Length: 176
Image (tube, rainbow, N blue to C red; front, side, top):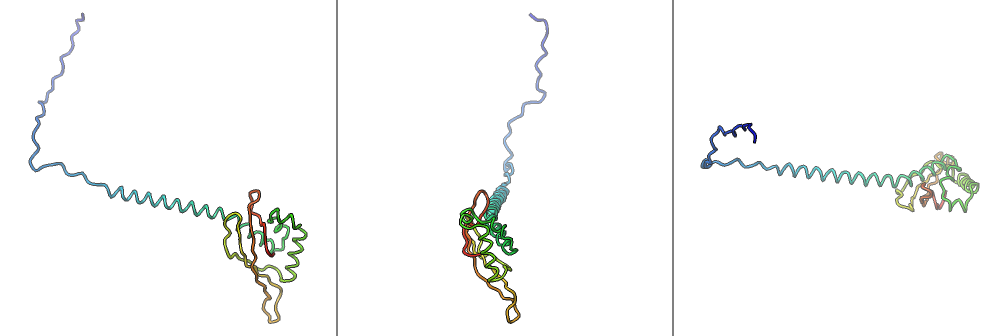
């Protein structure tokens, strides 16, 4: 048995709270609706999602189509500057199997002699897909005409491009 006394339990100094009836005609103010905040946030979120999706699709389109356009541009820039070895490097393996670099260079030089040097070229369509098909308008200039202007020949070139070993190559063409 222990002789230590326990302190008495504290008594509440406040009288018990009476349960009064609410004041007649008084109620808590209604809680303000914040529905408009959620609607605005929802619209902003949808716009962000839509914008991100369109950006991703746009970037994907550019990335997917850049290779074909770049390869075509580099090929014809090489032909324009008469760098036929570089142009030949953009040809696919199936074209190279049937056309040596010397034969390609000879055909290109014959085209230069007959119609003049390539002075400009432009895309008529944007190549997409694999295989990609592109049409170019090529203009060759061959000196001056008897009227004093330039003697130009313009024609369309059709190219087919495919990916080979991670790079875009020209796998078919109808003219140089």
